[in-house]
Image 1 (cartoon, rainbow, N blue to C red):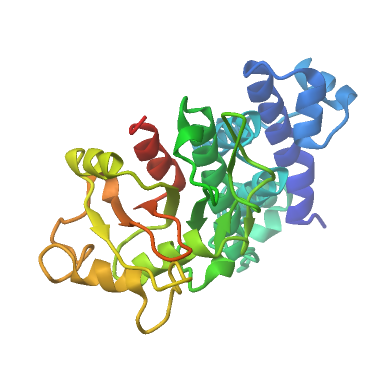
Image 2: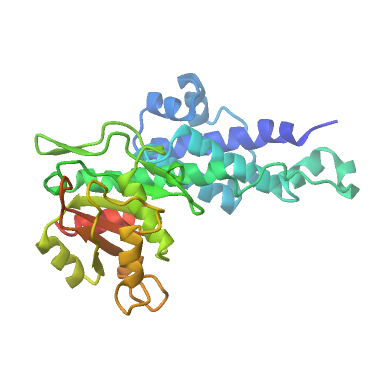
Length: 320
């Protein structure tokens, strides 16, 4: 008797680890860095590199395996994908290949009597919430790298700090929005990210994003920068709608409230039917900006909202 898990351990995992090790070495990671990224020993990396580990040609040749390995390796090398996110991607691939697919076929080869049996190995949900959250974090890290590597971004950070946020597809509250704990600050002319992104650590920027979504804008990411009328004009010139809202005293957004100022402004904007109402009144790549010019105890600020963190980060970078 042979379990499908044994096929995974004996044939799939050695092959995928070998492929990942090769992809990471091709991206100039050292043997130690490859070992750390994959959570294996340096001696294991050496064995993979010298072809001392048996691999499965069918697994290595499968286009879905190759595509996943390349995407995961690129993310690990760049620091956009955590080991948890990489594990989730590979787990999802395994469950899909188990469900009457490649791994099921390899299992049948090992146990021919399974060929005529009815079975279902789809024990994990490929569209799990964990996968959504890890992909959101990976996207947010890519956006952060774009912002922090952009010359001059530190000069756009307001006194209260900036934050770049991205939410999962079905977000309903700030716990579904990932952001930088403590915000991004200008430290001696350099944009500084104090720690890795987490969910539920942003209130104001996450609130603006959720308000925009409540208003019908198809967006999953937002970033705040200092307000400047020239920046607003540059956004408009580039085709990004810019909508002003009036914050309540001492309260920037209060997302979800009946009189939410961001949602109200977006719903009333443009043609009177609201930005994001499907008539093409969002900018390139589905972007829109909202801003307020300050109030009692409130610093003026500009928000760029769009489909994902890398997109809004590129919009801000292009303002520099």
